[in-house]
Length: 193
Image 1 (cartoon, rainbow, N blue to C red):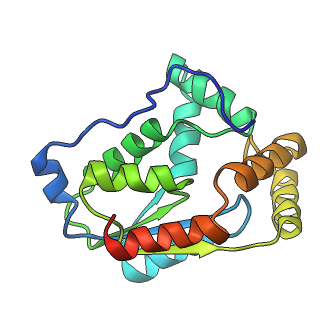
Image 2 (image 1 turned 90 degrees about the vertical axis):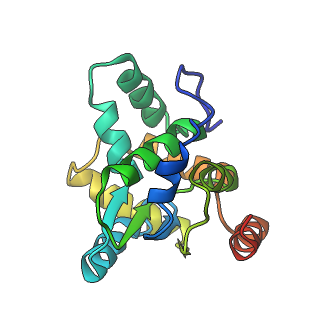
């Protein structure tokens, strides 16, 4: 449940020292929460208000999934099953997109990390923790209603009721940030690892 077999990298690539140094100065804010909790809208607004670069992991994955490559097909299959793309691939995708940007004050990274191991992997690869993590806590009923409305508008390929229910099940079992997981993330960020 929640995971799929595929050929995507499970481990992230280490960054060279000069690339790690490039990511030390900008402010980095992670926005996390369940599907349909509102993190996309609020991340966009926050990035605009503070003139930060918005990096939406879901959009990056959908862009990759639309490509006619073996990697695109693997990501598309994972997403259509409501499962999680491997942490190594996600972390590489996030780091690569942060490194593409020049002279930025900060980043609002939406939808990352999805589990505590991704947060730890990011810290290991980039050499720092984010400045802030914002968690959107939303009821399952509200998320389902929002996602079903969005599916009626035809905005996203993964907004169909079967996939929505699988995504929510994956969210609650694999990367829900409530209770102990949230305390662990909070402690990690306060202690720098």
